[in-house]
Image (tube, rainbow, N blue to C red; front, side, top):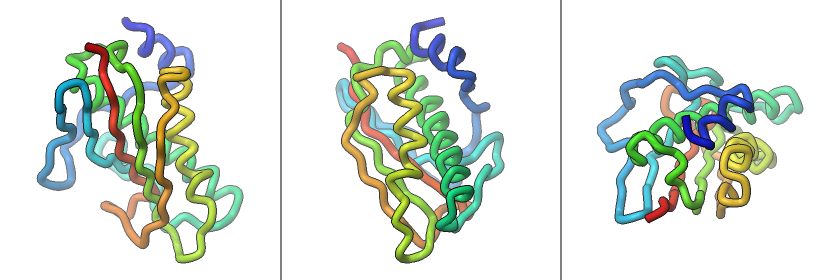
Length: 156
């Protein structure tokens, strides 16, 4: 077990079981040392874990942060595939794109997507810092509360 997977275990987190994508797309695409990860919703074992729209209340925002964490774990599952099973090959998380299923005027999208950011910082330390967007949208696949995509650089 590599260092990143040890950190994952120490944080009490696990990667999801494999699942079938909800559309026709690649789960990731590699271009040299850069991996482009397709957006992942908060889905676990074929079921959406948190549905939207996310209400503008402290409890709902806290639950949506958990949804973003699930998205990050799904991204890591696919990233591990792109790294031939070795997450220690990750050199840096370059960018996250976060989408929150919410009503117009919802201002807590950054706080929600922090749930995904925290996973990457926990596992990769300074290499987990990334550029990021956090956008409110009127709907996501499966009425999921959150979707996150990522761009990652690998070691040579």
